[in-house]
Length: 114
Image (cartoon, one colour):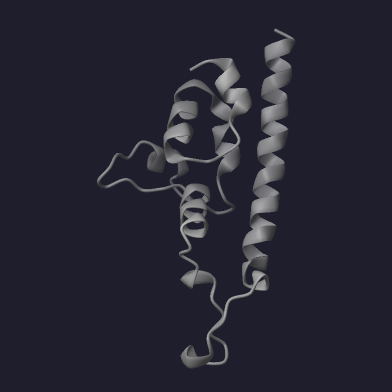
């Protein structure tokens, strides 16, 4: 994989994560807090692939699978979804993103200072 591809890497598809794992060690920065078996999940293959949390969340949100974020405090018949339902997820993603950016920055510095 080329260094340019790594520098363009913004998304979190399972395939891209697996390609990065082979070549670079900073990938662990994409792991959610308390996520178990991050690197082992990356080595699984379809049809029994296990997705790392950042990929699973991306798939669910992009494909409209929001049931795990629906608020049911008022009962099932009054369930609703608002952006506030993803507040905890947003905080987790923010922390993961900060770690990823720091690791990616260190990686880029190592490329240009080598």
